[in-house]
Structure formats: structure tokens, C-alpha cells
Length: 205
Length: 205
DNA sequence: CCTACCGATCGGTAGG
DNA sequence: CCTACCGATCGGTAGG
Image (tube, rainbow over all chains, first blue to last red; front, side, top):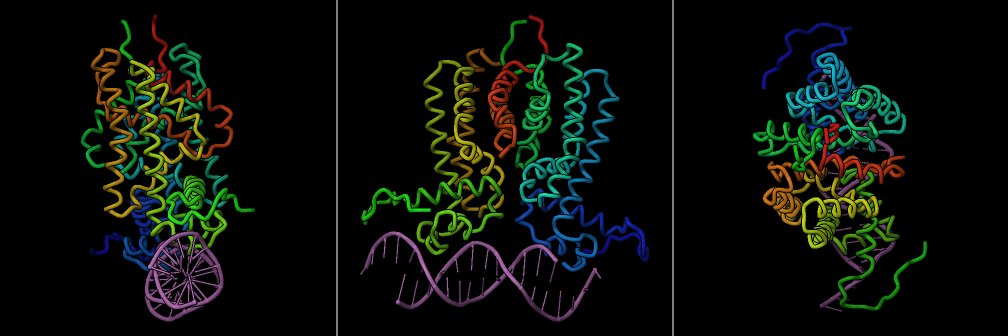
């Protein structure tokens, strides 16, 4: 493939173009096969550079996956803020969040799974700092929406943190590179929403 | 540590004792850190034998993880049969299943997560055959319980296969080696059950 | 960003 | 010929 760089000769710029390219390719490869299954050589080859070139942009392999996950967590943080502003109640806010996540490219939302999956393979320091970001930007922000919904009487009282995990868990199977699951994605999204809020039992109206 | 073998001198027996020991240790290590993060040397050391000894019992690393996952899938198959027999309706059968899974040692139920997670790291042949077993013993068996519940009017109509994935997804976060999640496990189990069947919205009775 | 490499460790197998 | 391994090393590859 030909090179895609639209500009070069920027010696001190942070957004070098290649850095973004590396993050894109690493996201694809890591979410497809896992952190340990992907070598720095493979990522370099996907980017059209050598392995040593990778180490110019990222200190080591861990710094690369941390960048992938941190960038996405920041996106998620903004997304949750928008969903909160878009509706006054928990149902509206959370359905907006769920639909927005599934409107993303599959390899983007797969980073949520990647983060849970590879947390144990991070160094203790990286794990600690990333875990805090994960809690602040993601789990905590969703938990607040649930807590407010319970206080307003919209939702029945429960452990908000556990409910966040349960909601994310329901979405989890759709974060794998599935086969025909893609064509049934819209159906799955609505099933997640209706199950989470109303359950699957046939209620007497 | 001392050897734990209770008997020896069984020249033609298949259950050699060491084979079970290997499967136990591999289960712990693989579920804790993932397939690629654990070396055959580490598994051998945990068993008190050399790496070459491992290869006497298992042809290669893939055969070992396949054995871990297949043995557990067979247990699950029996478990689902028992849950089916224990109750006449979907609610009773599935709550029995969920409670039984969470009554297992954490590293046992973590194999469910391991299977989803490491499927992509298996060779195409192994993946194909394992996927079929997974579908037969697990996903399909649970899907049947849901389908029957819908036909009997107990559950509202929906895509059974997707609902199985959603139910397993809800349990998924509790399949990680969590910290304080263990003390809140019973609360989490009941929250999964009540959410799956009734949802989290405050319904008018 | 590349060429040219390193210490170490990977999964797997030899003869005994 | 068999079992249940061991000590040493194979060809390749990991991150750096």
C-alpha cells in the first residue's frame, strides 16, 4: 500500500500522523487477538514501518496499549457527558449511551473489552493509574446516572456500581469480533435496553 | 511441597493423578493471566514437574487449554441438565443455573470467560470443534430453556440465542478475579436474577 | 524513523 | 516393548 501521510517535515509536532496511524492499527490488532498475542513487529508492519520506529513513538509495548485505552476512555467520558445533557432521566440517558456505543466502529467499542481483559497484564503502576481513570471516566459516571434515577424514583433501589457492571456485561458479548452478530446488532441493542429496564418476564399490565 | 499422589503403580490407568493436577494448575494460571501470558514452564513448576513432563501428558499447549475448557463444558452440560430437571419453568431452571455457577470456585466459572477470550488464539481446527461443543453443551442448552419459557407464555417473545448471550454477559464481570466483589457476590447474584427477569425500572404493581 | 543487533525466554523435542 | 518423567538443547521470536 502507498503511504497516506498528507504532510511531513514537522519536527516538533506531537500529532505526527504516524502516531495516530499506530494507534489505529494497534487498536485493530489488540482487540482482534489480545495484547500478548500481538507482537511489536506485527504492529510495525501494519503501519509500514520497522519495529524500531514504533519505539520512537512509544516507550514500550505497555505505553502503546495504555495510549489506546486512555484515548478511548477520554472519548467515553465526553460521550457520557453528552448523553447526560441529552435527557433529564436515567432511561433516556442510558439508552442514548448504549445506542452511541453500538454506533461506533466495532474495534472502538471492543476497547472496553480489551481494558477488562488485559488489566491483569499491566504493570502494577500502570494498572493502578489506569484503573482510576477507568473508574472516573466510565464506571463512576454511569453509576451516577443510575443513582440519580433511583433517588428520583424512576428506578428501583439497588447497588449502582454492580448495576453498571451488569449493564456493561450485557453489552460485552457484542464487543467480540462476531460473525452474523453484526447483522443482528440492532435487534441485540434493543433487546439489551428492554431487558435491562423491564426484564424478560411477561408482566401483567 | 510434598507429592500428593495417593496411589501409584497403575501402569495402564488413564487418570494418572498428575493429569488432574496439571489441569487444576493450568486452570488457575490461565484464568488469572490469560493463555499467552502463561508459559508451559510456569505450569510445570506449579505442578512440581519439568516442562518435558507436561508434554508427556499433553501434546502441546493448545491441547492443554482445550482439555481445561472441554472438561468444564462437560460439567456445565450436566449442570444444565440437573437445573432443567429441578424445576418445571424457565425462571426456576435459570435461577438454579445462575446460583450453581456462582457456588463454584471462582477459577471454575472463570473458564467461561477464558473460553470467549481465548477462542481467537486457537488454531482454526481446534476453534471449530470447540465452538461446536460450546454451542451444544452451553449456549444451545440454555437457549432451549428460554425458548420453552417463551412458548409456555412465561417469558415475552425474543431472540433466545441473543438472550443467552445477554444473560451470560451479565454474569461476566463476576468471572474476573475481583477484589471486594467476592464479599458482595451474593448481592450481585440476586441483582442479576432480578434484573434479568424483571428489569430495573420501578414498575407500577 | 532505520539497520543491526542483544539478553531472555518462548513452545517444543532430542536421547536416556 | 512400556510408563513417567529428566537434563539439555533445538529453531524461532519476544521486547528492547
